[in-house]
Length: 215
Image (cartoon, rainbow, N blue to C red; front, side, top):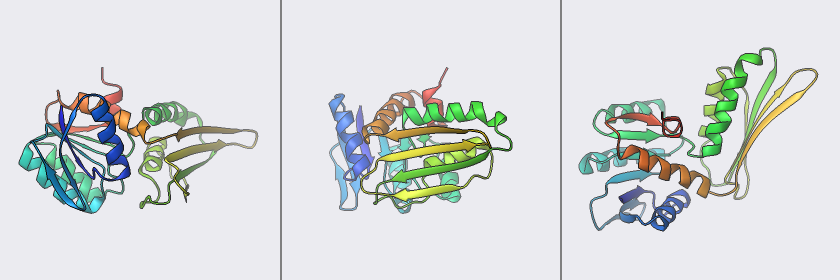
């Protein structure tokens, strides 16, 4: 496939670019703070940039009329609604975390949530010092899965790609569920899986759970 990336010089954008090229696909278009790179029209666009770039991303996607995979964190509710509106014209996969392991984590949480009434529950997440949003989008996904008001503690440390721990405790025991990303490759693998998914899809708004557990 011929692919394009918004934020292709960033940490995550570069990781995605390297993986797709390893798989034999061609980087043909990119947009970053230094401007636009163009060699051919892309077949899909991947966005790992910043919320303030979303308007520009939507403009590019409409011009090229291609699917969008977006992993930008910190999007507002209004921006998510803009993406859902756009999905009437093109297929979109949106997620705050493209890790396969996190999807399995959420499945476990979904199984547990009906058995933990009266338990103390807290979420702790840690990421690299350059991550701008707090709490992480993934921590919010865990909280939404629990369907409860849950405290979230955020740490910004060194070059940590991403740690998430869910603590559940009653007066006699503590249960923890944890996930650690060892590198950004974990997320790039999920983006690649999403790319193969979305190229065959009709217009619509999809999440990574749809990619992972499609029947």
